Image 1: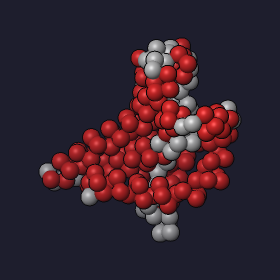
Image 2 (image 1 turned 135 degrees about the vertical axis):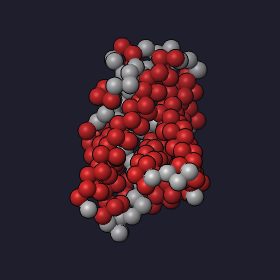
Image 3 (image 1 turned 180 degrees about the vertical axis):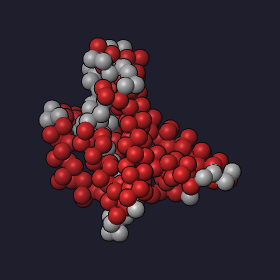
Image 4 (image 1 turned 45 degrees about the vertical axis):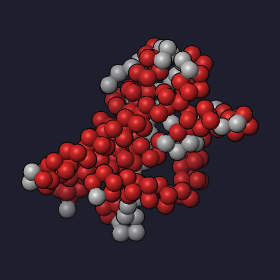
Length: 217
């Protein structure tokens, strides 16, 4: 049991570091490509995970959810969520105005979705080829992490990435409210996690399971 838990922790932490590093790096590359060099000037245009991770949101939160899924029957299938230090960018400097900012925001979670799609293909190929249990376990953990990150970060609540798409589509009164929330920074996200997240977690769990079933059955 101890060996399996250690394996799980190593697999989850490794999956998180790879997935979230690529997620944040793609935000930075997208903003730089669209004309804003803020992320590049602050050293975020990199694949170095140390520049991107937040100890609680990137590692401890998703790792805790994974362990709860394993060790608690009542917590089975909790969505795996997480975030990293937001990549700084200036929406006023990117091309295409609000839609350019939305492209920057979507670059991260869409990267996780792409990683999930590739991983699902590898799982199917490995399973059909009689791949070992360890390899399949690693791939499935990586898949879970990326699906969880995709779903969580697409929530349209500032500063999560989905809010950038809502900014581009919402009327001015809604945008003003979102701007006030975003000015709170990570404090607003913590409020969301502890107050509102329990209310929507069943929906997130359903979305996670649906995506996983679509990818691998």
